[in-house]
Length: 238
Image 1 (cartoon, rainbow, N blue to C red):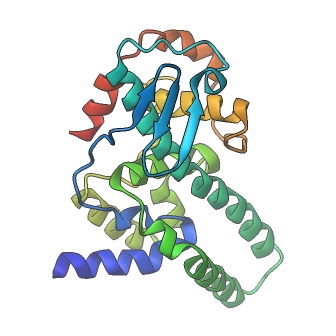
Image 2 (spheres, rainbow, N blue to C red):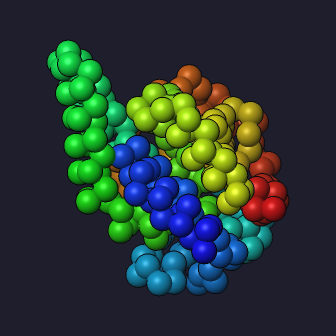
């Protein structure tokens, strides 16, 4: 009961920063059994058919097995579910900072911030509550990619250091950390996310928003040419 109450409180407070990621599902994550036919993958339950030759327009991703292909596109769905919220968070952050810069009164700034929080809650709470733990973890990473700040720093800056501490403590109970950073140049799972993003940007399945971080996908891609998708994803699920 206590755990449920903590989860409910976090849902109410995190929407402003798109941090309802910590309303995470505690159900075990499983690979959906999507259908793969020759060069097509049909994602069950989403009514989406993806021609692989159109998705992979950069250096061809050489899947070693059907299992690896299935894992890749399972993760592809997770990234696609999380990215729009990270992109929106960056847009709202810029908007909020521009507005706050015009407000001198500390009291009015605080009131405006709460107004924005309420707006975000009403618009996105229902959708974000449906996110899985895997999507939540990806969202935390992508928040850093799009804003240049960790989820922890965002909470600390716009709420308080004390709230950031307790939010992160609760997040740890679900094997998540609001302090996670995005480093595709050195972390294989982050590179997998970046690879999916770049391929999605090139095909138009996701709208590109420039990252606030300093890295070059094309410079680091060769380092991961032999990446083991199954091993990488499973290592983070433990």
